[in-house]
Image 1 (tube, rainbow, N blue to C red):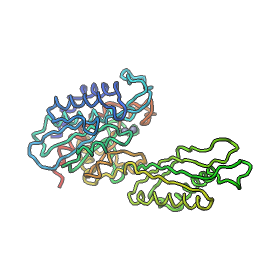
Image 2 (image 1 turned 180 degrees about the horizontal axis):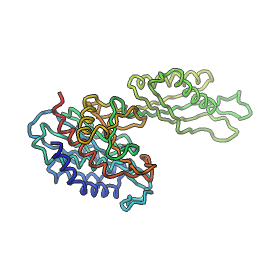
Image 3 (image 1 turned 180 degrees about the vertical axis):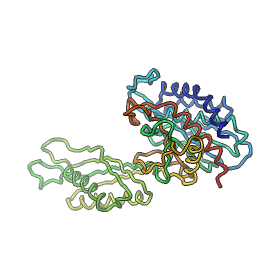
Image 4 (image 1 turned 135 degrees about the vertical axis):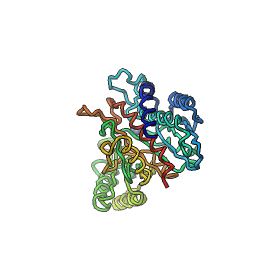
Length: 393
Ligand SMILES: [Zn+2]
Ligand SMILES: [Zn+2]
């Protein structure tokens, strides 16, 4: 079966590169993936899958029927949205859309999803159960997975696989990771309310800017002294709004930030922990405050058995030399984790770096480029892992 899958993928390679370039030329922003999803639906239908459009707003699902009717459904998720970035790659097939670019490789993910569906549709009689392909919109704004789940895409799904390109791994290799792959990313807003006054008479006012600066410092210091250093927490305040004039003491400051963590137990105590630090400082200096902690996406926690399935599939397909077991997670976020609240899963990193280049530009860079030979690596890994999935106990 592996040889058949590899042969099918190799035959499809030129078509898949065409598909990828087509999508790359016509990127669409999060939640506006109209042409991309229509294109995806067309390819899936012509491969004989049962297709539903308009799932999760602009998403698509394609269901491939296995013959032996094991009732465990395997889902494979790829995302389709692009970023508000002006492409500067200089490629012939650079984005034709002003200010919009596939700089996170979701064009490659979509292509890998389609390629896997095309390959598996040729060997459907050998599949023990159904494979459901999820083509998700709006990953970059961390909304699409929620939209998809609300529309029932995880009903009956017993496991899910996902993929993300990675420029620092060379094309031809993949990276897998046991346990945490990405961080939980939550949003933080702190409002400090003091009392305005003359800059020359601070004792008659409550200086919200000064208190805000104490709050920021206290939070950073408290992380280093009160959070377990083996359970990382990163808190970054990225925006401060407050004050009206150089000689007026500010009565209100708003701090906006992001809070990243890897362990669910650590994450659960963060809202109270932050609030107590803010509250202690504000109470000491006579200010009022509000802390609005909004949970974003959880951390991606890869399932052991499914990660092993990806590892063994890729190692059989090539050799262990092309499979990196990643020692560290990333503190980036990925809404693949939303599906993992409904079924176990594993996401792997698909190497897209050019081996002969010293610099491969990072994700979200206007000159981000991928070595397209990686598409086949992704397709074979996913197709073969899918074939082997029903052999798992
Ligand atoms: Zn991205
Ligand atoms: Zn991405």
